Image (cartoon, rainbow, N blue to C red; front, side):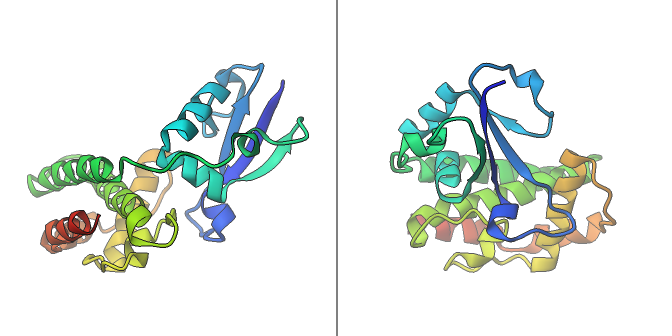
Length: 205
C-alpha cells in the first residue's frame, strides 16, 4: 500500500477539545478508498491536484495547515504541488452557504422534527461563511472553528449558542453524545441578526 498520510484541522492548530477528533487525509497511489478507515478523508492524487489548480479553499487549508506524517517519497505529494492557485470563488461560496443557512433556519422556525441535524447545518454554514470570507478580510485564510469570532466583522451570535450548534453537528455526523438544549440554541439562532451579518460580509468581499 503506497500513500501519503497527513493530519490537518484542530489538532494541527492546537484547538483540540473534548469534542474534537483527529482529521486524517490519505492520498493513495496504489490502493483503494475502501482500504482506509471510514472516518478518514481519502482523495486520489488527481483530485487533490485539481483542487490545487482550481484554488479550492480546501487546497489552501491543506497547504497552510496540514502536516505530513508519512510519505514513502523524499518529498510529500502536497509539497510537490507547490502553492495553490488563488481562491477565486469566495463570493459564490458565501452565497451558496447563506442559502443553506436560510433554509435550515426556516426548517428550525417551522419546528422541524430534525432539530439537532438542522442546528448542525447552521453551525457549518456560519463557520464556512467566515472561512470563505477570511480570504478577503484577513491577512491569510482562517480555518479555525472559531472563524466567525476572529473576522473583523463581529458575529452576532453568542459563543454559547454557537458552541451548542457545533456540538449538534458533532452529534449528527460523528455519533457523539452531548447534552444540548436544542430549543434554547434554536431560539437564539432565530433572533440573532444573522442576515445583517451575512450582508456585511457580502459587502466587504
